[in-house]
Image 1 (cartoon, rainbow, N blue to C red):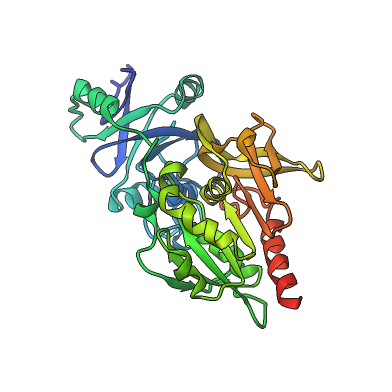
Image 2 (image 1 turned 90 degrees about the vertical axis):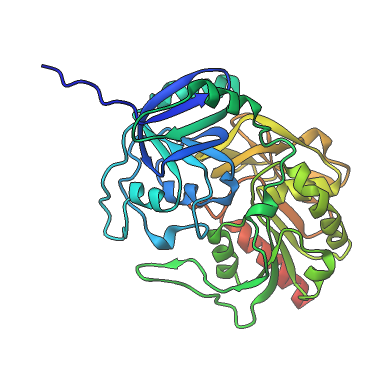
Length: 386
């Protein structure tokens, strides 16, 4: 005799009225967000704590979520930022000697909702065909859901266009960052430079592994809030400025970030941007950004270096892109996505200024592009030695 199916304890309602039910885990309650899918096979903890996922729910296409547990050193921010997760199977028990907790308990303690038992292939196809939908995710152990109210809330949500989320996830005060990359098996490394380069990092939602990569390349990093002025940046006498990743609509964040970046561009300082930082730099140079249909979220995105023809496999997480056709004279496209031809990098001719859309620090993902941190250090070294 077949056992009766378990009563659903979680529900995912899309704005178009589509409903998915499954088993809830983590925190209880209800949240509204944009739904995206991520194709990475590892790094769910890093993804959940990546500030770029603010106001987004992540559908994982890889089914074995939870198998490495939770490890404190792998957090990209102090707390998870993604609003929730959708998985095919209920999270598995951890099998990892570094794990200090399991995913379900961690999500419950950190107030994040999950739903398992979902046909993630069907859901991913819907996202690819229709674009990232607005959704409501609810978890109730009693399985009581007001479906129509959830659909209405999803339809009424404003979405990410026009939304400045960088200010919300950014640090509130400046701080120094000194940890380098993880030195296996037991500690974070330090810079190898006798006199580290003074780098100011603008925090639009910076991942810790980006800051670690900067330190590993020879930087002494001071992190400033997203709203910092050019005067506040220059007060630290930086030898280089870094523009971090982050969430939300770049045009909205640009209202206060672009004027600051334009002042820095007049100082001939080396400037390096990643993800939202790439978009902020593009806007400051006079280009435009556009909302993508379903964005790029994964650790297997091929990117071509326009100068060398080299193909790098990269980690990506963005729902907006720089419009390559809007790049002004004197700004050239340096990298292009081989998935859809979208812009993935730029450089300013005659200036030590460049940026990329993808994540060269990986975490999770391949490290094909880690050389970009060395390039940034080389620009600062060249000016120090001049």
